[in-house]
Image (cartoon, rainbow, N blue to C red):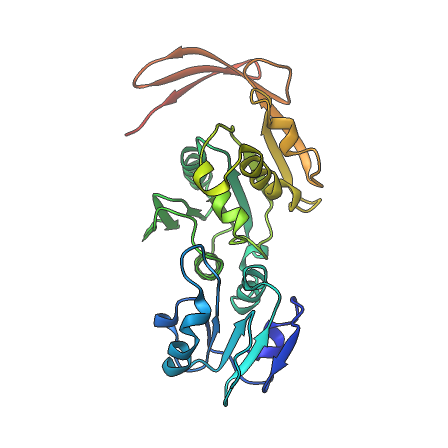
Length: 290
């Protein structure tokens, strides 16, 4: 794919060099760069990727996406943007063929229950005959193929790479944990979600977000980005449930065990082996497997 095509969804402040060159890969890790790659110099919390631009060029990078231009650019094309964190998602999405728009991507966010809910949905939809993918902090799945996870949401490039593999495998649904770190760091930038679910919110990850308000707002940003064609399901039993969806364009549905909601449940029995529930007036037995 030509570099100019990859740049059409971002607004570079400067392009130094040939924008019509062919790009064979997109990487944020200079060690993974191969001949013809676009290297994205990310400013992380610990390390500034701009330090590794010479290494990426040595590895064969044909172009560099960066925030600061070097004094000498040589034969490599440099694309300057205000924020590589904002730009990497849209660029990766285009490079991998916009995979999130070729299946239904559903995100689950909140403090607790993300892995459980995403995994339950993945297994439930497979039981209904759908081909599905799972993106979780425990393990990623492309249908029944396990792909090791790094215990955090993958970066924007790896996310799109995995989604593209799901599309190639014929998946029509993908279920994904959306951590507050991933949302705040724009790792899900450029993705098109068919829907999102909110579990709950407790005082967590304040080492990164510093304040509870920052943490809460990072979660809310996920629902703010949902398109009007999407759905948003929120927990009325959590005091932040309605706050999460107050500015979303998506169709909002609610669930609760205590209040009037679109989906209402009551726990009738709870044992180590499973639970017996009443969901919208129907009794349902749920077996725990593990």
